[in-house]
Image 1 (cartoon, rainbow, N blue to C red):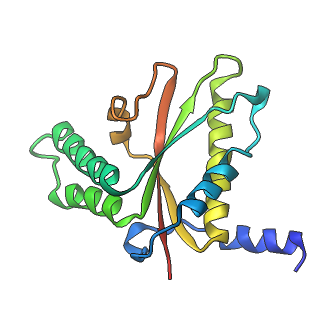
Image 2 (image 1 turned 180 degrees about the horizontal axis):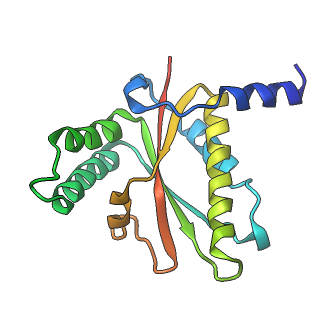
Length: 170
């Protein structure tokens, strides 16, 4: 197969695959590094490199799950709180082998929409690299991420755009 055919095949196979379908097999740090490196190759106007990523694995990931559940519980009234949603938040994070927070850094040099677009292209590169490595993934952007400013050390000129869940699919 030539490069164009391989690329077309990877693009056609790219899908959001959710944590319920992930296996227990660990993603190697080498592959995670490759995924993040591919993200940094995304085009970005004026070379602002507006993406900021934080990897959550192991205990850090478990703390993220607990924090997200606590945020959900704290932000819902008794009437709107759903036990199933509360449990699902923890399940998805804990079932994923790794979770990466996706944050945009607004430089002030170019319009904000261009920096969000650059981060989106970086995430598409992550999707394609996951697909090429038989790793399931999906980008979730629940409103709860707006409450993660402290744990993600998000600065005034930054915004969390969501979480990128990853897990091996056998």
